View (cartoon, helix red, strand yellow):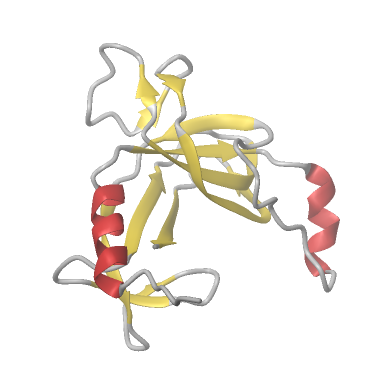
Length: 168
């Protein structure tokens, strides 16, 4: 018999490697049947084995990838109730901030967002381009994080931002 543990430093090393990968967020219309379930005791839950999103609206590149740490007095609050501060060094918590500018995807409901690591972009897509057009993403990469939420309607004047915390 033996015991083992992935040390905190080991997790920080993995988080550091992860943070250096490119990311892309896939916005999805999800399944409209979920809408009625949000008021129930057991709202819809993503499958742990998921590899893609259900109904692609479009892709955006994150505007920020950095390290955070849990902090009850922190300024970053996630919808799931986590509270974080920006870290001064490497931690096991990687923040991926997704910001969708107004008019990027007007007239759609977003119910699902997938954070993919190591996507393949089409040749010639500028590194600073945030909102990606059809054909800019050749392959989204590996699904790292999947969020299902009540529908968020994006009208022509709606900007949308969200922090995703990848805990290693």
